Length: 123
Image (tube, rainbow, N blue to C red):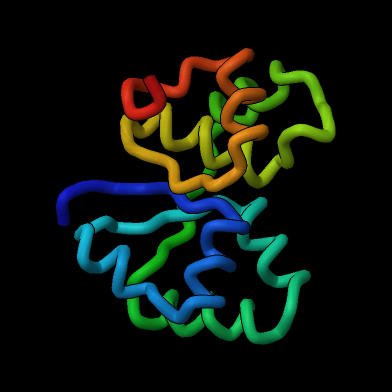
């Protein structure tokens, strides 16, 4: 593995839609995601939930637990319509783990950058 990446909901769904999880395998990333993303996936379309469960059973994606420090940092970011808890949890967890976030929402990235340091991968 070349590294760890925390993936958000929309990016995960996009991989499912194009049926191209092999892109992540090609890049050799160990994928993790947070409980907020998992909750969104499970509340979404059955095909997305099935895709997640398949990848999880194949050890291609893992639940990374949020620590108290992660939750405290998330609570410091003002609630807004520009970022979901799922996206924010991915940014915070990735930053605290020293890894990358796979997020395709430019608005969420800019909003998060106003309140937390996103790491060198976002500079």
